Structures are given as C-alpha cells and as structure tokens.
Image (cartoon, rainbow, N blue to C red; front, top):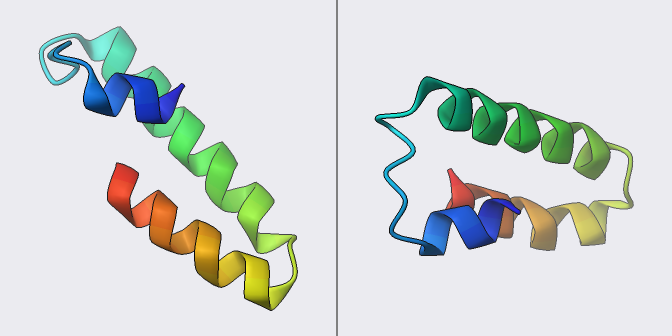
Length: 52
C-alpha cells in the first residue's frame, strides 16, 4: 500500500485522511520490523526510510 501511494501521483499531503492513513501504516510497519531478526531489520529499515 505505502509503496503504491508513494509512487502514484496522488497528492497525499493535501488530503488529511490519506496522509494520516499513510503515516499510520508506516508506524505499523516499523513495529513489525522491530520484531524481526537483526539482519532482516536492516533490509526492511532501508526500504522503510525510502517510503518516509
């Protein structure tokens, strides 16, 4: 979801609902990444930073 929104031309900064949904999804992703093994965390954190 986040990568599709990021690559689309949808201006999420103008829409509060989409912006909040996007930020909430990023927080959920960060929580899940924290539960993974360190090697996997490194890879996924790099991808997460690209989405932020």
